[in-house]
Image 1 (spheres, rainbow, N blue to C red):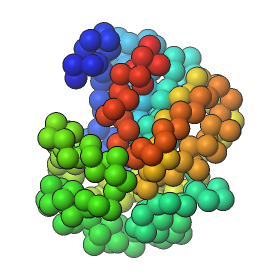
Image 2: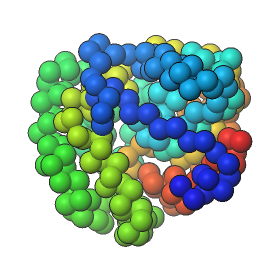
Image 3: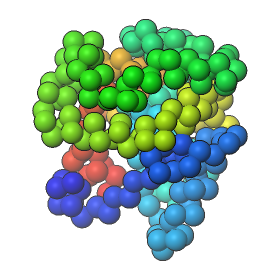
Image 4: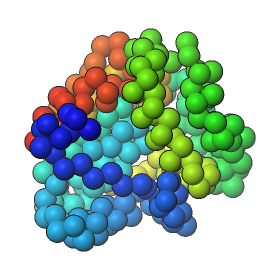
Length: 243
């Protein structure tokens, strides 16, 4: 927060449907998200703005740049998920994420929802214990960040808030992200900054490089040896880039 305030940025965070206090939206598509963002902007009297998304927020950020070209000044994806039908897209991922990205698009949602509950219900009940169990399984850079009390607290609060209504929203999002997003990356005209760590094992730098090659006005920043949590050490650089 202190970095955001010091740079004079007004940061507005939205819960996507099915997370936190945002109700689940049956049949939601990724391209439904820009309409939510636009409605909020109108309600707040904001004409133009930048957008940012971390991890699963990446595709939703790109959807905004595609659907709201006259309103988006710039966009950034941070450790963002990319298209799964790319050679090597799942290389270097954890076994669980490799399975989810490879086969999520083929699973009927009721089965995917059941698998999501089976895998994540314990984490949903106690995110802190799950974080501790993952020590040593994350990239060293991420383990170092999670060991910081301030970073751990932010991650813990984020997961507790996200899982407050259960896992329905998350399971639907896996369903969405692993299927065609409803637009082509080549159709995005807004400037897009793509940040990714080469050691990220949740999403892959192959995805990031593919998106950078397809999006016309894009800039890729690959952070050597960094993982999924690069948002923490690079937040000032990222915000500066956007403004």
